[in-house]
Image 1 (cartoon, rainbow, N blue to C red):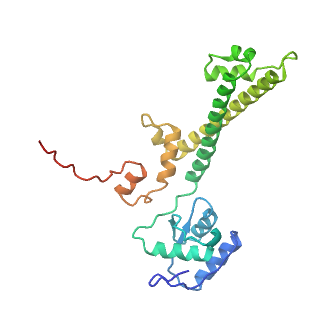
Image 2 (image 1 turned 45 degrees about the vertical axis):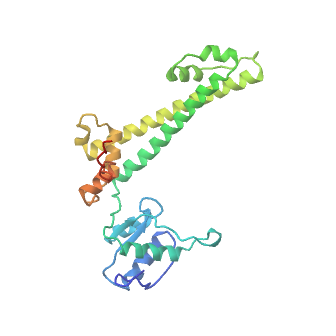
Image 3 (image 1 turned 180 degrees about the vertical axis):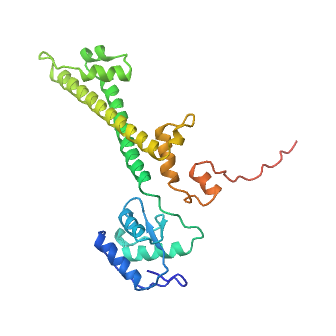
Length: 258
């Protein structure tokens, strides 16, 4: 805890990341001053529990991105020093970010993360499947070549192992079948997450889905980034969030005629 006027350390305490620890922090802060702001790093990650607890007690919380850490011997860390540095950095900023909202936004966020993981894993497995077919023994390669990904997955999922095949052919066939079935499971999982995302968006902001070209995944991504009214403090901040902020460039010099 640091003083707003001077940045001097008032007190320090280390508590467990549990409801009891959060209550201990509130009690400590309550003995110091009624006017305070909590600067929390990673409000959507390691600081999520503390942020939820503080918000439930109507405390003012601002989100602080991870500040630059000072290099220390042997790579050791110091939580008290890092906390003091974060608090002082928050005091020196003109604009402070609000933590993202919970509720529907958090529900969408976890669904998006899970779907993204399933889609990525399915894509990795599909590329591995194609690579294995290219190098597969002739008896398998001839049966599976020149197929689309969908057709290849379906064919591999039905592969059986023949008793007269050698160990390489049998192992390759079993592996192709396993990969194909994994792809199907991951694809089904991604579809389930998409349906859940669609239901959440419909319940929260159905007007977004009425816009041409805006599906549930894009709508959910926008809602998670935007979070709530007031998070973007200006048009420029919103443009930066959307990746549309102009890039300063020097004026072009007139060409010289020779």
